[in-house]
Amino acid sequence: MQALKISLYLAAFTLANFIVLWYGKTGLIFTAIFLIPFDFVLRCLFHEKWKGTELILKLGSLVAVSSLITYVINADTANIAMASVGGFISAQIVAGLFYQRFINSGYFVKVNGSDALAIVFDSVVFQLIAFGSITPVITGSQTALKMIGGLFWYWVIFVKLGKYVRKH
Image (spheres, rainbow, N blue to C red):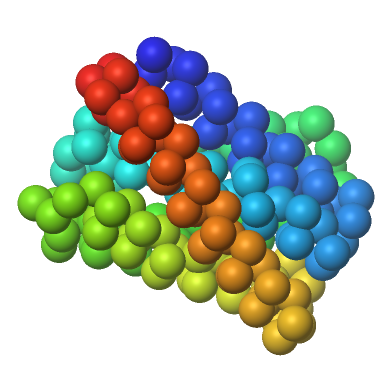
């Protein structure tokens, strides 16, 4: 089950990078509702299973591997792959700190609270690195959509699949 979660994480991350390559800043809107929030919610599952240095190394490796896969498939994605590393690493650090601070809280608080912070960091940092600027309408739209998507994936993974997914 862990291998499936990791594979899905890598696939969603990589696909999101290619959507941005194909559609530019508009692609950020497409990835915001399903792909990026899916990865943020999966990070919460990883946070439950992996602890301390293991968590940091494994999550960092997943981000690096996803970006490397993106680049190996198409070198034109180099800037997007670097933006993904910057956006996701900054987002994962902030989300991880929040999640750890609220580790004894319910899943709703720690998953959605950490995702909300991660969403803001990822949205801003990714755009700055990939495009050299922030487009307020895109940033606002993708932030709102990622939050809606995060609530959707929280409901699917932690509520509907709940005990089965968290056990494995």
